Image (cartoon, rainbow, N blue to C red; front, side, top):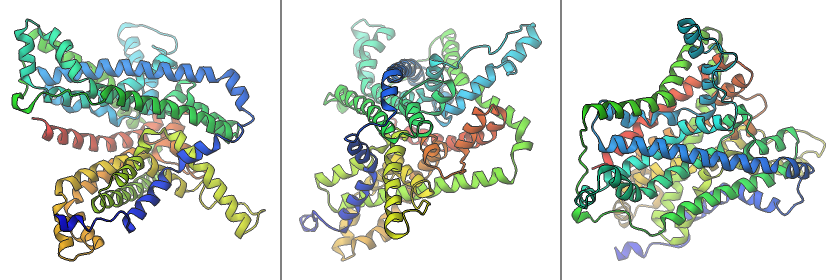
Length: 545
């Protein structure tokens, strides 16, 4: 081992590659930071005086509302499927994850369509009970509606992580609580819930990041947040300086959430010792409670996935003959191709970062890999602004230096290059984590043996490491593929002129009152998103005791 360790170098070609990747991925943050020293745009004063308070208020209320609702939905269902036996429990373990495949903006216009005068609910009420309601049955086009929609699509983050925490908790601790005279209700609040606090907060933090990134839902519902403000400043007012200032404020929200999550987690220990660990045994309650628990989980699943999904299927059955044509399949081809290329590039860059860490396991190299994966915490609108501005400057420099200052055209900004670049920044962590898990499984000894036999690092990577982690590579590409397919804010800002993806097409059609027609593109996004969700559930089940 000492011989191999002596071959670790603080600098080699792999560390150079990793530093280059880090600089590229950090471009949006660098741009926003340095642009803050410039004067704000002409629209800043107007926005600061008239709109900024509304952005703050709506963003904070949206975050708090979604945090409360995801906590209630995620923790309650996680506790039921983890601790009780009731009809359908084993199915709800994975059915309650499916809403993650339903993008918020698609859920938003689906619910609006369902509650509309011509929607299935009002049609049923009119035909069955002769009940007539003017307009929508329930007005969701407001802040409470946005909170509801985002909560039912994001609560699986809390459900997933909290369920895993509940399952891994020791039965010994609950037995001790019972011996002290506490009932199951008191044990839940005094023992299980405090022990699951890091998992719960982590799930809520993930949901909060998605709330800050959301544009489609709040735009469709007319709720002004910092994300919609960035779009308004960039597209409507043409003011990049104001967009930068709004993006910087939005990043403050992100850093506060990350800090609070880290602060509450700290160095506390929430696990029982391994020597006293006993797996939890699910309790089979009386028939009445079993029915109640099934109804609770069933209702959550019905509202968060089944009902809107069936509505989409109905709309597709009515409109597919008008929508699905050559242009539609070209749209699918473009979207899938863009997602596949982005996934492959992200996984390739992840391999470089992780292989650098295997060859040079120093603290500063670990920090490079951590920083390179922080893009997932940055809202898409912020990344888009932080990438578009330097690429526009680069295009101007190329034309003024090598072509002609009077010539017009784009080399980087407004092209697929900018879009793929942004996807890499945003979703690096999504592809990085599966690849990291693959490298951890094979260990470092294989590389050490190869190097002792005289093989170069590049040959070792191609001949040994990559074949051993090919499943992890495919998993990483698949996960990135799905996230890119449903990404909206980045694509709307950075896509080339008249370039559509399934996500932008669905959103554009819905905002133009073509909700039924938009269901065709939306259904493909959702069905594709279900695949990694099922895979994720199987992975979690393998890790549970």
